Length: 68
Image (cartoon, rainbow, N blue to C red):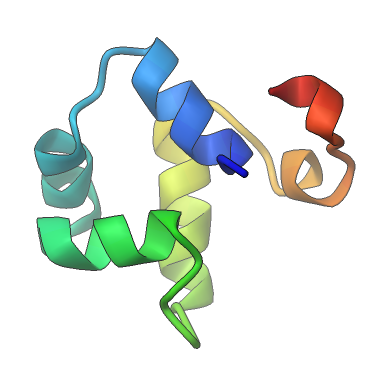
């Protein structure tokens, strides 16, 4: 399953490298984060990622597979 923020990043044409730079993290960290393999990401980083994509925290709470 692809996570909603990944879909939005791709639709907006933002590369992983660019997104990582915007968030102040490495590209490797972003890849792991996008695949839900970062065990305890900083909440501020999650909010920054959502803000960069024009999303709110609600999008993570109220999504379904139909969003894909």
